[in-house]
Length: 228
Image (tube, rainbow, N blue to C red):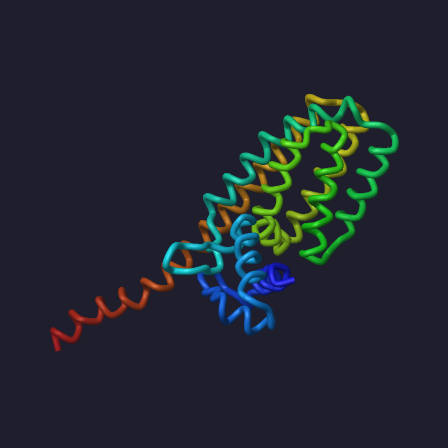
């Protein structure tokens, strides 16, 4: 409950990147002991939502352009392997289930629900492979990347592209086309990583320029006053 509430507050901006997550204050806010708060912070840290430092405590993790790209690069490698292993084991029943999840993600507009349905669709494609270690690694990366995926939903045109890729991927799975399914899942994930990296890098650059600009103006004003 505590982890879910904090995650929602981070997503909706109530808790901004870098905001402190003090255990005693959170325990009072949720009317619980320190133990569930500590466990919630550990969970959020493992998912990439929080950053815990020795002697400094926990804070909301910053959004990192490099981390976003790396998560999707690793996902591309692992999910390419997973889909190649899964396609020969798919049945009509598993493909129907995957198609239903694909349709649900396509029609979803709520960011939180979309993130969950997007993950469910991807995992349904790989489930027939019966590779538990691989599945666990992919699921962990999905959780770590959820903050970044939700950013992408701020650009409706990119969700349209994702939905189109999902539909094409579903068709390749039904056709048993391993090579092209691997190619598409790799391009799909690497493209998302690059999109997020570019957006976060540009946002960081704009923020830095906004901080530096006043100093530039003051520096430019000095010679004028000296002349006078």
